[in-house]
Image 1 (tube, rainbow, N blue to C red):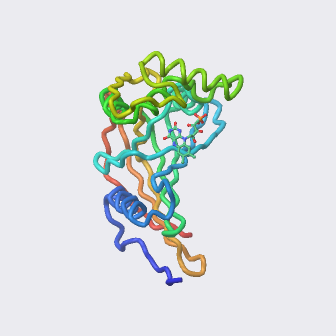
Image 2: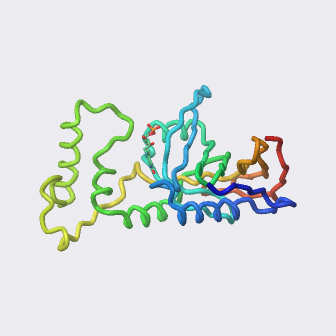
Length: 229
Ligand SMILES: Cc1cc2nc3c(=O)[nH]c(=O)nc-3n(C[C@H](O)[C@H](O)[C@H](O)COP(=O)(O)O)c2cc1C
């Protein structure tokens, strides 16, 4: 195996999300894992009890600096984010010896953006979004499949297992009001690359974010510091 030597740039650049974007692109190129855009997202409730799960990072917007993911607003994470609209996220590209940590406030994406993304998804995923009250108990697998069949019928889609002439289908499924995007605004970013003999390279960027109307934030300049591993 090739010896791995990578250091973070010196001096540290002023825009860390440009590096994150490049690392994400390289993770897609190498495709060591089926979902290079998987993101571990930690949220917590009002009492500070944390929970974490994987979601897919659908977009990195280096300017003004946020990540986008989609989910059910009434799920456990959605309820926690309503109580405490902050999150911490981790991306780990093991084969590339890189880790990214991002922390900051979270806001729902504009409805028009969620509509556009939902419309771009396959109708099977759209039906599933209607059928699943994410994170709620369900009596059985059969009951879940009945809910999917009921949603399919409601929107004129073929029932699961009876695909029908899919090519000819024009199924229009509106976005459920409880499903959409979130923007995780980067208030702190840490980049980590594995070093020889456990002398890893780490740097952390922080900036101030002032809330604006419509879930946007006015961002101050980044301050960077190299950290001991
Ligand atoms: C690879 C992978 C990708 C996932 N992507 C998403 C996603 O983009 N959105 C989502 O809501 N759940 C996604 N999930 C499921 C979540 O991990 C989780 O089970 C679900 O969102 C419910 O979490 P909650 O009960 O904490 O709200 C994904 C799971 C895996 C393993």
